[in-house]
Length: 300
Image (cartoon, rainbow, N blue to C red; front, side):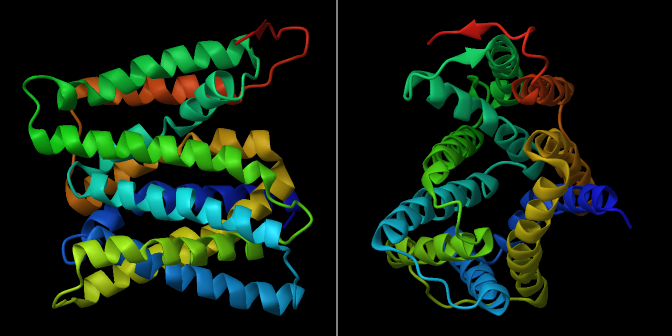
């Protein structure tokens, strides 16, 4: 099998695991609190990646500066993001939540322009505007007067999760590129577990009765959606490049909707389907490079 075909299969598998993770998260949340779910899946995945990294790369020395940035990334990307995401999925449908999270690239571009004062291309600017309309169509019912408080709160949690991951992607750019990505991901996860301790104490553990399906859901999220998907994503980037890989990731919302339909019996109302398509179209424009001559720069 050629490297290109292997990379294509890798990114398609990644899309499947990440796209369907919302439905599996909702199943696990039937018996587990968000803090316990996030802590358990992140701890299992982090320890596994540490073992794999040591097997492949041996002992790797990280500086204090590396650890400080890894701790920050672990807090924003693995504690805050996954906790907000889990609270969101506990209150709204997996399909709706997946569509909202599809707007993460838009939050990233907005932060780059408003906070970092970076310039963006015409395609990116147009893509952000188009996808904002899509997000409005997806969440419109939740934030309207007729929407119930659970839907509104769940939508806010999801928007907060999308914002936190956008911040994470910018902060993570400072990570040492010479260090193994698998090891860096593992350390971020383990730091994220440490920062989850206050949430665990706040929610309390209490008496937990866990069914086999919940155990299976946690293991699936840890082993496939976190650990394995990390490996596959790196293979995809190496074989296809970042831009092509990101285009494939636009399929995640549709995978999420399909999985939610068959696993949870969920469905969206027509305007949300339209909103989902608009979001993906906008994200495609954000990721589309085009030719140098065709790019018009918009100064922030």
